[in-house]
Image (cartoon, rainbow, N blue to C red; front, side):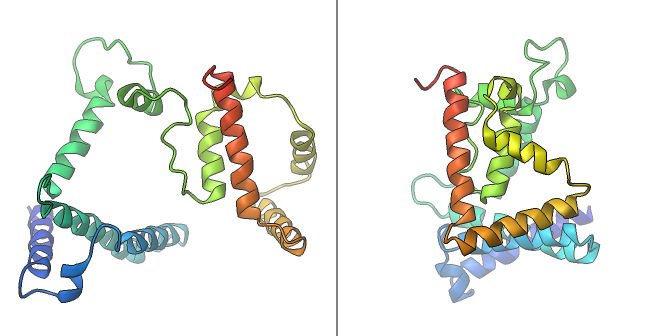
Length: 220
């Protein structure tokens, strides 16, 4: 199969680059040194999707795949706990099956009504619905994740003056573009006052997380 042969070829190329006589730059890279490239390639993939550029998307997905293969190759060299790209694939296959028992397993499942995040929380022993959300996500994405995960508790969150004001402003918006313009102007006004919008939103998200945990009975 063509797909398998090209994936095997990519793995072989990376092996060659990391081996003696290969590329000095590739050979000296670590998980830590590659972080910036993984983040950069991810954002370039997002941009290709947003531009609906299929050719660019194929290329950027290749760059992301290279990062996955690169990290797996580095992990393969660990002196006491090595694993490789096949172990990575095996892990995600097992996870997909485990989290979709209604699709892959026969018979009635006791947790068939749990969604993906609920299965994940149960599997990892997480207490709060907000546990496991990467803290280093951009503030807007972090806020969206926290709000989505805590949606079932939304009715218990007290209505604040800021919420009322936001609802009034949102009532005058008629499109996502107008929302974007409003966010841009808020960012401009914040900068004029010497405020960091990213930091301000991140702080608000953390306050919401604390509020959610109190509603869950985890923080007193």
